[in-house]
Image (cartoon, rainbow, N blue to C red):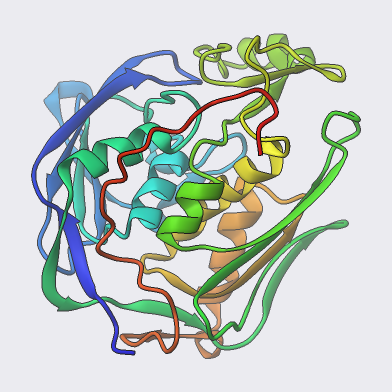
Length: 314
């Protein structure tokens, strides 16, 4: 099967909201971009009216503790990019200029769904240049105690196996494997929300984080209970959101990945670290323009039926 063509948005579009950590209002304008442009952020609103262009790549990441940040505070940065990047990756958008007038991507409802809805409304156009992929040739792995993240060869596209473990019985130990395609991401991951623990809120806010977190954009956990009146969107929403985050972080490879990503109790930092490990060894990967036997990641079309949120569904 020949490699698919690169894509961009069919037209300019916008979205607005507030940052989950900064609570600052932010406006984003998505501009179609030419072939081989990649995904780049134009950070506006800097001191002195400056602007800064930041490529969405692993080597532009400056922090990855509670969220993924590209650029740097001194010259301009954009934080909490993972949900947007996951939406772009899963929608098959290769080239886009993202104009943003604040320091943080808006949290919206805590998932990738609102971004995908915007892209669906505008639609995509194919570009007359072949799509490229990062093909994993041999295993690479990063570890931190019992935690690990790794990339393994996998000839049939992009597979993820993610496992998490939390002490609360509400989450416990959860594991999920999924072949990441536009349809699987939409069906299984796009609406899974970020989550946090009530016991950590005061500490986070004193440190300048979670200032915009609310029950409208975060699944709040108090002991073994969910504080959100509507409950969960999926019975295993926690592992699904961790997978959503990983899709966004791994999109910082610069090209779609052909490989199998596995992690245990990982997070943004380990997701980015495994990309550094991959690209540090030139024998562990190759850039290809052909995807043998894999589902196409382009030509995603709008899907009319709305997602029906229900307590404990799926």
